[in-house]
Amino acid sequence: MMGSIVTEVSTLGDLLLRAAETHPARDVLVLPDERISYEGLFDRARTVAKALIAKDVKRGDHVAILIPNSCEYAISLFAIALIGAVAVPLNARHKAAELGYIIRNAQAVALLTSRHASDPVDFPAVLREALTGDASPHLRHRVLMRGEGDAEFESFESFAGQADRVPADAIERLRRQVRVRDPAIIIYTSGTTAHPKGCVLSHEAVTRGPVERSRYRLKADGRDVVWGSGPLFHIGTMAPFIGTVGVAGTFLTDSYFEPERSLKLMVEEGVTLAWPWFPAIVQGLMSHPDFDAARLGSLRQLFIIAPPTLVDSVQLALPNTEVIQGCGMTETAGLFAMCDPDESRESRSTTHGKACPGVEVRIVDPETGDDLPDGTLGEILVRGYNVMDEYWAAPEKTAESFTSDGWLKTGDLYTRLSGGSLVFGGRYKDMLKVGGENVAAIEIETFLCTHPAVKTAEVVGRPDPRLDEVPVAFIELAAGMEASEETLIAHCRGRIASYKVPRAIYFVQAADWPMSATKIDKRALRERLKQGTG
Image (cartoon, rainbow, N blue to C red; front, side, top):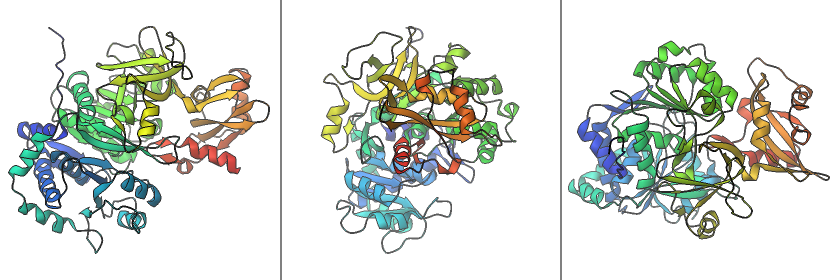
């Protein structure tokens, strides 16, 4: 049938092999100071895979990765996949206590890390603190993918030298045994619980959607050159990287985000698709003196999740680029909804896409689970090939997160419009109850961002003896702009309902936001309120 899309499901190892056979000399990953071809990535991943086998790492074993964006990160990820082991990417921003918990909880048998001048911290030192005593009884091997080894961390030369003990056909045999529904990756995500939860994602979950979108919805004429701003341990960057490999494209990134470096890389490499995702990244690019839409003439599409005012400004600044909003989370292996090609500019600014092909969504009353009519705010449930299998080693949390018929209870609030477009309404836990009225924090945040001095707004509830709780806002002002607490509260009065007006404003510098991966950590903001240190 004309226009039909062929569903293809692959393992991570097969994706790399196919691209290495068809475009061996093409760059798969490019950073400002390093690059690697498909042939080079496959050869080096195969060496690491053989070394892991020599270390008695078996199919299904968990192998942790604590490496910033780099060629070594990609090598590690695909080496683990080639032998049917499961990669556990670790958040490079996590402290020793968090890393120790995840390595122990994931039952990782091996750890691949880095000692390099460009690393944001001394990873071996942090890990040494994290792994004191018997904190990780399963962990047998600690390997440096780059940097000098020592008594606790084996050098790469020593590690890779053991690959010669394993016959070449061992990798081929193991790769072909991997099933598409086998676990590929466990990504730990922070939530309302005391400890991060490990989302178990299958090969199908992490490859099918990204590759299908790259092949059909986002395909460039000729070679795809894709830029991702975030860390590869985050699904928001890992998914487009995997999609890029699926079409033998070139993925651009960096070990950290700096607008000048990013713009230079995109211009020099001829970027066709960009995934800046978050407002701070987009604002950093557009406000930089080097930003020039004419120099980004090859940029066909750009993904963003942001308030309408910022999306509007991006569409004005890049009139020849399709600006796309979407919905996603770690538990759904990234995107579960995105804008259609024929959507209007207004729709792209005010809505967050429609359910991706093969993915089902429902909007329900979070208290009763009953389906709600279009136009009503409720919890979004998701079901499909992309949904995680479980939270690792947490059967109770898994059971709480799924309905009896397999729908993932996301905890996110959305409104579905009559045409199928979804509008994000914040987290259910970010729904304030002000004097009996339900108030979505994101509604207040979006309105605060209409003030020209406001760059970022985060709203949380403060306990109140009369109204249960009231909204307060944490604000980062735009560079060179000034505004007082009284000015911003006055901006809201008379323009939004009185019970939605923030009762207090706390100003935050860019470096002082508490972060979890790529998001501002509202739990930490609430804790600041409790301690009176807002």
